[in-house]
Length: 345
Ligand SMILES: [Zn+2]
Image (cartoon, rainbow, N blue to C red; front, side):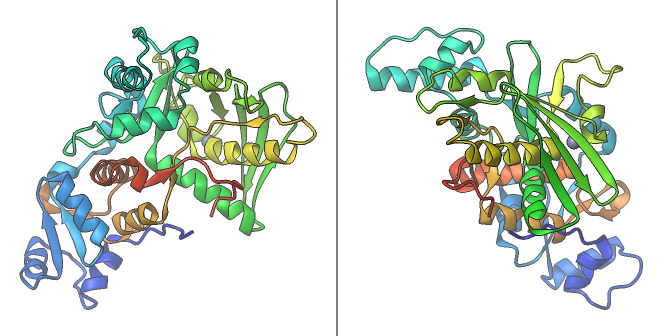
């Protein structure tokens, strides 16, 4: 697995123009563009994703691709309409219609995804995300997705946080300075401690889909799944934050990495537990081409800010670009949820 490093703006420009001056002006970009050294994309997300994926040149994106910090905070705390609601009525209706066609049986659509319906359709996040992504608008790319649990709280996962979680787990297996320590399962709950150099996080994973293979309840337990982490990213953007009244939890990378570790532990204890293990993973895992895309988006892409100032994309803008690539290529061509031996890369 590659580690997405973050180059600075100057380093990105110097990839195409080693002798670039200190101040990157509009004229310079125009020069680079005239010399066909960079590509400019004004407003099409599909075109941007295609060029970034191609990775041959530095891509400069127009102002339409900007999500400034204030807007980003607002979107991440409200989900606004920028996250896919995977348990929405239209999404469920499409899945039910396909199932009715397949079985000839009539299934009642409910305004909210109940345990019974989820068990009947054997739904898990993958099915719902795939359906929602493959019906999204290419020019209105999602930053991630969410579903609403039985406590009326939204559980949200952004693309980049899911990738960061996979990378953190991968690094903890390779490097001494990152440790993910996992406690004992108490019912379907477990506590995880993550140590990274001088930082330390405590993550509580609750309502894990820890089930026997044939247990139909695995298809509804995940609806309740919740993470509590004491990091800034999560406490600032979740219901733990007392100034924030909305019932939304945006899962952080520690939660995802801890979850992957919990899967590993449940697999190790599979025999002791007579076949019980974590059955359902809500965190999308990027395939190699999606990781390459992120590498290009982070290190070969610049955004034209107000006043024609160039800067590197922020995390939310990267989410938006990953969303554009996901819709362009279709979900299965960028992501997966399960590996046979569950070794991340
Ligand atoms: Zn965290």
